[in-house]
Image (cartoon, rainbow, N blue to C red; front, top):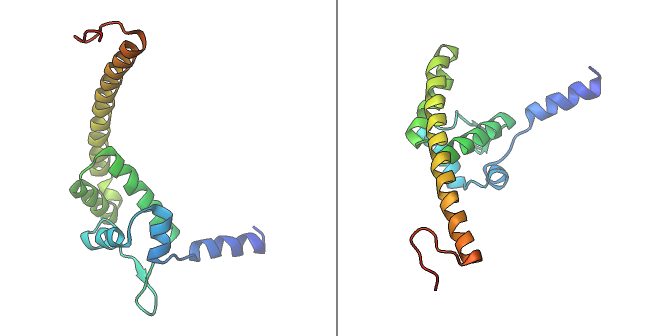
Length: 140
């Protein structure tokens, strides 16, 4: 590795972000970021000598993952539990996997529901395009 590459790698790992920068990057409010930290969803965030939060790239990656978990519909309590398991160490891999598999099953069930809903919408859209009665409606 060249000196430039090692310097670049070091500077990236040393990169720090303020709470307002993280809010702008993630779309989360500063209030939400503080709340995540308070409830244990975020690992301990380093502070500057003035007490200002200083987030790392690793923190941003974690927030990206938390955002995906939110999109799955996972409860905040389960997300916090997952975060606790991560902090507890590698011996919790089985429990983490189980939590994620449960969430995956829930997501698949939601996808099925949404596909069924989409099929109904397609029928209705087809009805209005063709003016052919479907789903108990009569043409106007």
